[in-house]
Length: 188
Image 1 (cartoon, one colour):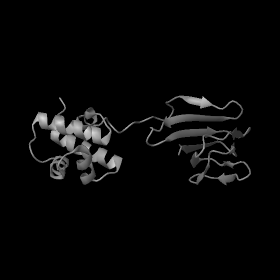
Image 2 (cartoon, rainbow, N blue to C red; image 1 turned 45 degrees about the vertical axis):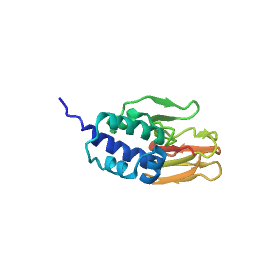
Image 3 (spheres, rainbow, N blue to C red; image 1 turned 90 degrees about the vertical axis):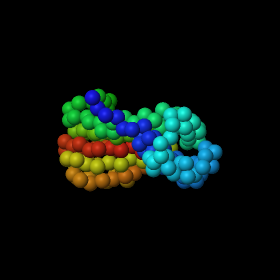
């Protein structure tokens, strides 16, 4: 049986994580929650021996002040490691070009980015329409050679090369030889 973290240690780590996520000081959190800064300081340090009732009251007040459910403060975070093995995952094919993409990670509302693995074959280029305003594409070539970028500003890339360009304008992908690349779509 796996030993879980003591509740106070879990709450201390979650409090620090959520406070930093929101970007506020301990003093500001204390003000918003109506608690003494020294109480929060001890709680975030994982010191003291508060009762369950005290932890519940603190958790509810802090949850409201941070805009998170109480459960996020008392439940250890889920595993952060996720693996997609080569050859696994849903592959999507372009209709008019020899390009395959595989979504590796969709962005959350806070991150607003998606990560794709692209496989490109020479032949018909992929003409991509503009994405939502503020989109930015980041591409790192893993193997092969390709030409990409906004229409009229394309650049040629080789293994290890990185390019970034606005994704909210029409853009172009063309394999000059069998290639693969990692594409990060950033949505602002």
